[in-house]
Image 1 (tube, rainbow, N blue to C red):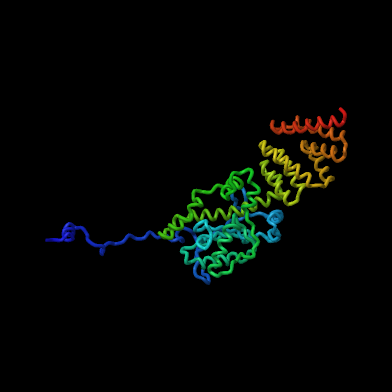
Image 2 (image 1 turned 60 degrees about the horizontal axis):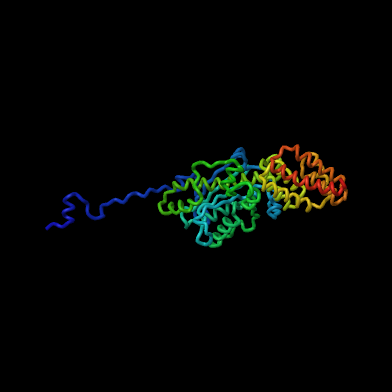
Length: 405
């Protein structure tokens, strides 16, 4: 009696796997997706992609190339080296990782690093085709960072730098940025835009501060680890093109953001458009003990217009600052200049000075009356005018009683 196998053969059905041809793996190596080259290092071969951004490149409305006046940022960061080093000694760095947990189980499979070379912004991206190539990638990064003495990151002090330090130590390779000055732009961004913008994520700042919108090549950050794991499984690097784009734009955005902030701090009056940004700058200058400049910034913010709650907080902040300044002659000069320009707050401060310091009720009354005239005539939102008139009328009533009127 014929077996089942014999019956199947008679029907033309192939039995067994000996003659089955396995499907061809759909290999698309990284070099077929991203333009790059292979760099020989003491630890093996590393894949490196390079882009060069010319002097006329604009990231939105901002050039990453700037004079980079970093004195104030250096003072804010409490590191004098930031102001002393030329910009070509700074490396801008961002990593894409296998997870966000950190520790020895997390590694950076893509490191984007850039520096200024002959006036051009030169970006190199170091990629792990396989985790076994990590020592070679780390060695290749050392070569790129060799001319540098400072690091610029975005949340890098908390994440990127510690993660890379762990990887270097695991492979017993010296950490190339161990003694670098380190400027992390995230705390600075929070300081400047916390009150006005709902997010201080780099991509959000890129859109709403720098005016740059990424193309459809962009991939969300949360997808990136899974795209890499899929690549390791399939060896199909095509989905990683968007990861390289995401990383490159993060690095370029950091340079543009630093250029923008450094110039903004030097010349805020011609660069800032929002009242809350002036208030944020005023707070920063106040913390740097630049009280006169802080007072001017607060006043400009009050002029431009704020919401009612922000306005109240700014007025309070300015009043505290004026007391801290303590330099009466300088304060008087600034108040008189501001009063001449119609700043109501300056009239009030002068009234306070003459009432409480000079015991000159008559002059205090004159300044209070002039404050009321300005408050009535000024083009102010109703709630701001209401605020000033309430304070001024209360002061007028008290001063008139003191003067016997």
